Amino acid sequence: MSLKAIAVDPKNTQQFIEIDLPQRDVGDNDLLVEVKAVSINPVDTKVHQGAIKNGLDQPKVLGWDASGIVKAVGKKVSGFAAGDEVWYAGDITRPGSNASEQLIDYRIVAKKPQSLNWAEAAAMPLTALTAWEGLFEHLKIQEAGEDKTLLIVGGAGGVGSLAIPFAALRSKVKIIATASRPESAAWCLERGADLTVNYKDLVGELEKQGIKQVDYIFCLNDTDGHWDALGKLIAPLGKICTIVENSHPLDQNQLKLKSASLHWEFMFTRSMFSTPCIAEQGHILQQVAELVDAGKVRTTLTETLNGLTVENIQAAHHKVLDGHMQGKVVVSF
Figure 1 (cartoon, rainbow, N blue to C red):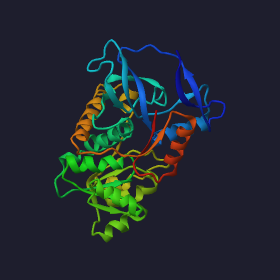
Figure 2: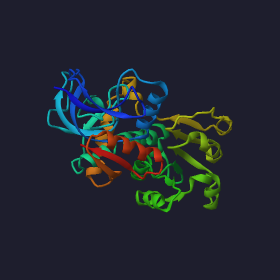
Figure 3: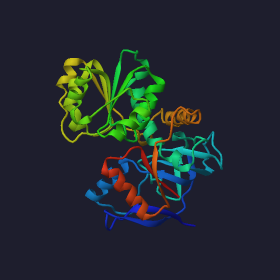
Figure 4: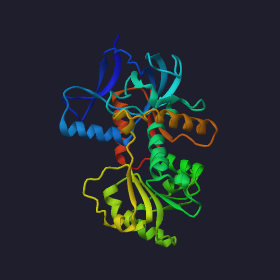
């Protein structure tokens, strides 16, 4: 029996094609999941662009966010059984979730929130993990007092839409989010931001609010473009965490003079290197599921496309590449 998937076409990497995947053996630490919905993230478009630039020898299945039903479990799996409803963000070194079935390491999986449908759940894992790890493992804002301030650059995007409520729930910091449009500003305020500013002039916009420096910065887009402003705004002994790779050298002088620290957050690190703490991602997703079911965190789903088709995957990629999305776009099967 073959499995349906949507993959990048190796003969024309600009395009997606429908392919059949062979059945694969379930590894000792694997879950075999019947995928019900996937969401599209910037990583999907970046990996696709890499395929366009470098070429492919064979079709490549993208997709790193999913919800679905466990069909089989590996010999070393604990805590899961066939029939369980799960959610996860996946592993960039393995075939993606744009497929009818997927093999995934059980340690980076959790039971999905009972209060969410498949599409609502698929919108969240990758961005939830990125936000959680950035805020609480790198910036450690949960240790900050009420007099501290967090600036989130890119508040209305997928990660920002969860970073705001996470920060509001698990810390005492004042939350400032960037948003360039009225609807984006409203979105951020609804999720718990104390203030929004236009990212096009961060220093000037914050000065208008009487703010000359911030203690924590979570940069979720355009590290290169914002770098000079971030260096000016970060307080002495402050912390910056970014999730966006730089194309040009980052001048560290402002950080050095302030003894400020720079942290990188890459959600795939644990699965890519099979770190000793890989199971922490499953634990984080379980905590997020509990927050969702308690009504403390909402899904970030804003648009659903129905059907695992070339057209829907292509359309979802275009929406992400446009760069003005609030929340997330999901393809539901």
